[in-house]
Length: 296
Image (cartoon, rainbow, N blue to C red; front, side, top):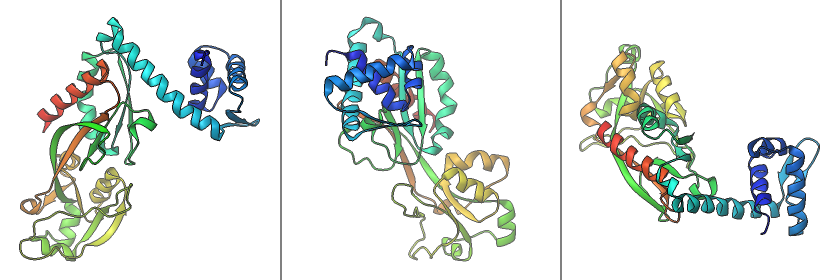
């Protein structure tokens, strides 16, 4: 396409679904954006947007064109930075996907990163839903668990462990479990994986005996909500140690059956294997691996 500016305008409109918002980002008027889109549609011979007085949406052709153009602009951006001498200084926007609980272990180290790399703008997306890095426009993601996507590069960040915890008030009321078998008599707060809908298993060493059936008092798909329910006295919850640590120190949670909790988790940072490791991404990967390993 000869009109690269028109493609840029189209991508911005497709992302914001607003001519006004796109114009504000590009520093031009909404009218100028509309004319640019009209010229692009005339050149392509297809309509890219459905327009009404209240909203605009992408047509089927527009969605296909957006996916290709967005990828192309990302590659152009990365290539320009790699070839530019100025790009040796890490700078620009870095989009990172993290689990909702990620702020617990990441945010404490980010002020140091911001001081070290003041020209990098971090755009963090916290969600327990699995995202497609390329389609979602993410530079990297931090995830836990096994890595199955062969199209992604990865580096391990560091392990964590799981603990069983309950509020002092609940334990005073229901008693402290002395063995894993005692959990059968307790109310349990369970985590449901947002991606699969399955309940998280409690990986607890119970010797020769099978772990008893757990009675769910409450089920949720957010670890912060799970910890809050446990602190409120709903029952015993199974959670990462870094999530429980502050509450245990404050006395609002107490861990139980510590010797039986053997499960370990693993966080990794991932990025698309078909994308050049830009200076800003390399800086982030190296920094996070260095700092989170130390934190563990």
